[in-house]
View 1 (tube, rainbow, N blue to C red):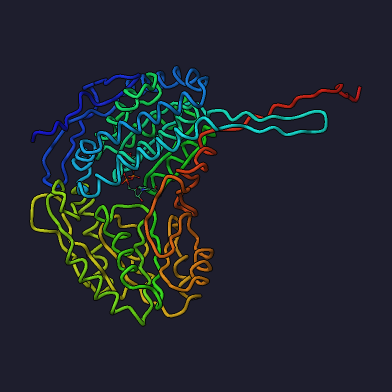
View 2: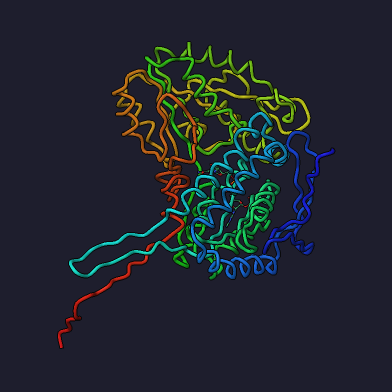
Length: 485
Ligand code: NDP
């Protein structure tokens, strides 16, 4: 291997790489081959303390700078990410196994968008002036303080940037813990931010498993926690944060519905279903994995879907022609195979796929089940793999009730040519992010996040500012103070 995947050290603290070999070793595995490509060490209590101390110390000076100054650094970092997109995409592919065809357009580039966007609005973050006769109130928009970011393994660069950009724009500092499965990319984000001029201590990366995340969340110096992860982890982190009344953003899992009406453009609906089930080998939180297809077009839809899945190029993720890669880990592959077995055992019809691919690495076939019913495990639980469940429906009211009958509420999509119906359905969806005749777009300009068990708070857009800053009201009296005695 010519590309250097072993980082200089495991952690990035106070502007520099830091190692502590006393921490539990973390082996980083390239999912396409199963080969160990780096060995890192989980943060020890001393490392965690060092990161939080650095973050706490640096934050006030950063918040005292002007928004223009902070924004300039973030925008410079965005430019560096774009300039180095090729190398960063290769690293993202090593970390996650996602094909270079995807990582070169969806990871460092999306991170750069976030840094550019929040860098751009940093200068215009303000409070307001509220006139009360001769007196007045003004609000100051202030930073929260030290923020902890905890990431999932599916989009390590993007998640690191989506949390860092609004946090830093608002004048906070951050300690970020990537998933132990994909620890490499956030270190590059830290390096680049510092190269762009970010003062030391403002963006720190510490490695480790859940215990490291838990230690960060409960530390008294931490003011806010932003987690991207599963609902069970979200529940634990939310509860731990509540103990210290900390601010939270929870970006959690989903089991999102996609409804394809009888008047839909079938080719577009199939494209949406492919994007919403097989991109990143199905490891995307907002995927539309319950695909409700109107009975009248179901067989046509399935036939075209199967035909197009046959065009997937499965193979070496570094080959730009490859469009479908391995699962992130052997463990995740085993979890998904378990769901496929359950689908068959509970009576769903396997239309295509269903097996591990006979080659090195953690590859699964793109899998489609039809005749899925609402109570089946594959229709209720988040699988996080390339497994699509196709369900039938005939009536709009009925399908809406079924689509919303889930504890999750991350995303939802509708394919129809009927304009009125499209907006009516979007309004009725119980989900934070909805799509009409498209699926899984996530531009930085639009709020992203979940309702119900899929989360609280929003990432991206101006909405994220509300979750990384707080308002202080300052009352100013011009006339005399009236007291009762
Ligand atoms: P997990 O919930 O297993 O882990 C998420 C992160 O939390 C990891 O870094 C993990 O560490 C850490 N963690 C685990 N336990 C604790 C704890 N008690 N305290 C603090 N931190 C802890 O999720 P996955 O990594 O398996 O990612 C997949 C999940 O993420 C899916 O459910 C998916 O839907 C969701 N997701 C949501 C997104 C959204 O924006 N809504 C986007 C992407 C993914 P470690 O794993 O290293 O032990």
